[in-house]
Length: 276
Picture 1 (tube, one colour):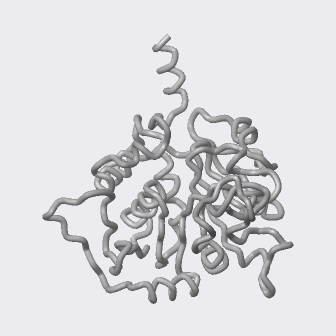
Picture 2 (cartoon, rainbow, N blue to C red):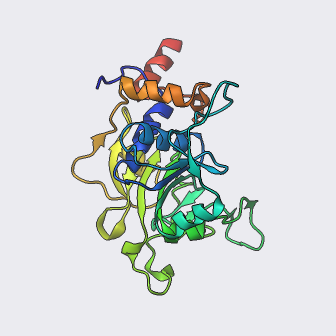
C-alpha cells in the first residue's frame, strides 16, 4: 500500500472511521451522515467485507451504494430483502454498529441529540428528540463522529439531556453492567479516541498530523486519559483514496468540514504564511 502525500481532513477522518468496523465481522453497519457513511462503506470495500449495509430503504447490499445522485445506468447490487422488521432484529440482537454524530458527549460517553439548556421543559435549543438513541445504545455498538472538537460538544458534567446510555453507574438499567455498554471509537477533526482508559475514561489514541495533545486536552470539557505514547493518525493510502472517490463521485465529503482543510495541519500554516 502506498501512503498518499496529499489528502483532506475529511478523507483522513473517513479512513480513521473505517477502522471502527475492522473487527466487527458480519454486522449491520450504519453511518449517520456523509463521513460516517463513507467510513462504513470504505470498511466494507476493504478491511471487512463481511459487513452488511442497506440501501436505506428495503434491500441489503453486496456492495455499498455511492453517495449522491447516480446515473441512469447504475444498478445497485441487491443481496436480499431487508425491511424494517429485519433491521430491528439486528438491533436487538447486537448485530449492528452505528457511527452517530451527537451534539453533546459527556465524560461517561452519554450523548445528546435532543435539546440544549439546563431546563428541559424550556430548552434554549430544541433539536431532534432522542430518536433511536436509547434503544441503539443499550442494544449494540456505537461510535461517535465529531466534525468540530470543542468543549461545547465534549461537555463538563453530564449532557443537558441524556439521550443515550453511557458508562455512568448512576444511570445503568437494572441488570446491566458497564461492560454491557459497547462504546467504540470517537473520530473528531483533531484526534481518534476510545473509552478504554482507566474506569472507562475517554482515552486519546492518536492526534491528526499537526495537532498537539495539548490542543485536544484544551478542547475537551472533561479530563481524558493520555497514555505515555500517542500515535499520529495514519495517513490514507492511495488505494483508500481511490475507493473513496468511487464511493463519493460528487465529492460530497468536501463540504462536511468547514473550509475543507488539508489533512496535514502544517499545510494550513504554510497557506496562511504564503497569503501574508
